[in-house]
Length: 282
Image (cartoon, rainbow, N blue to C red; front, side):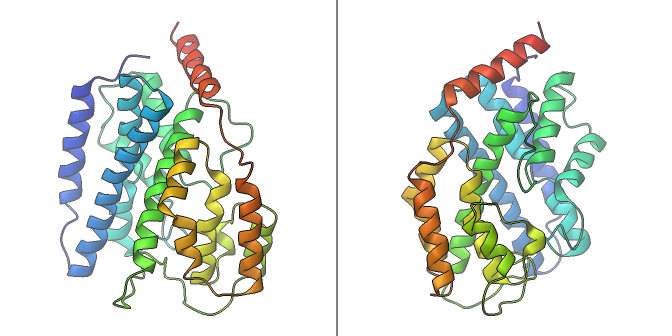
């Protein structure tokens, strides 16, 4: 694989800024939601770089990771402009839309074929409920890295949102879900059995919060888990959930899981990723 040069990343950053500027119109609510996703993107770039550095990635690997993070949500802007929602169920799959936009604008023209494929596949997998069990391709490591970084910042966004004191609501953030009482039995059963909650199971805002809690079962790297715990994301979401036996049972199960979480061995993961690169480009 041809190394990703700093100038290549800088050019894509400049394109991204120009592209997002096209959507900064409409009323104040629309502008706030576009800026919300723009700022989310920049923070995911920082998160993925921080995780990558702690894992010992090389400079060119860090640039590739940041490029993936920069483009992972590029479909969100057209999605919101067209449908006024960030709900894929109510509009389009934003990851697939993002891949189409990247290809349409030939954004990755400076990359070789293998690097371009890796970027596109990583973006295409970032919003799946979980990665395919038989996934063995070269994008696996970077897909996991992106999913960790993305979750870290989404947790930041939603915990800040849930703790707001003004009582205002943003339906785009809440995926247009009703703020009704209780939780769905399917969501409860998913979490009690240590499964990631599927978006199709969501019936209200409490379910959405529990889906975010369940992301803990889809974290791959120790630095990510350390950030989750130091920032108290799970506790902050629990504070805005009903005080019921069901919720207590869910968090009891999560505490048990966190005593022995399923995390990647970074040395093995990185070595495997580099072997794949070398074999494909040898």
